[in-house]
Image 1 (tube, rainbow, N blue to C red):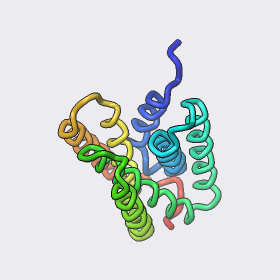
Image 2 (cartoon, rainbow, N blue to C red):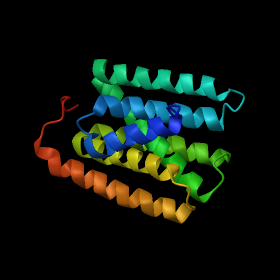
Image 3 (tube, helix red, strand yellow):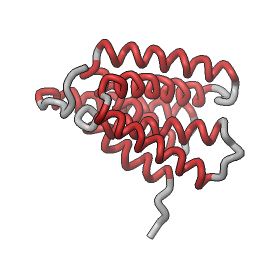
Image 4 (cartoon, rainbow, N blue to C red):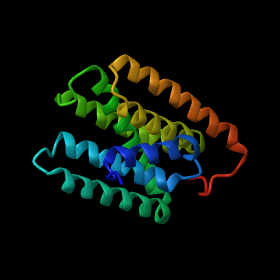
Length: 177
């Protein structure tokens, strides 16, 4: 039986979010918590071994999942920040060295914008954000150059968002913020 690697976990959760992210909002918060922690541990906390980084990432993901269930409005703000930052980081990584300090400024600004956007347009943006995070996560797993990763991201994002918004008549499990 193959080992459960972070890449397999990311792929499985990303596929669920691509199609059902709006209905799975707590899973989305947990997933972006995991993905953000995994990204930060790989880029900034390079002294950590892979197992410790994975444990920290899983713990942050579980915390995000519980937070989404217990404190929905705060979870919406946190997930907006993490999704905005996560998307900005991967967009920057496609075109430049992600270790440049300016990338982290962009990540923080995108996180703040993500928080504001999630608060203003929750239902539509949850579909857009879950599809975007799932699409960028899946695209980053494909061993292709930056342009092809961008194309894969765009196709998956549009497909996932369209799928979720067509299902919009079904109510999300959580109340509107």
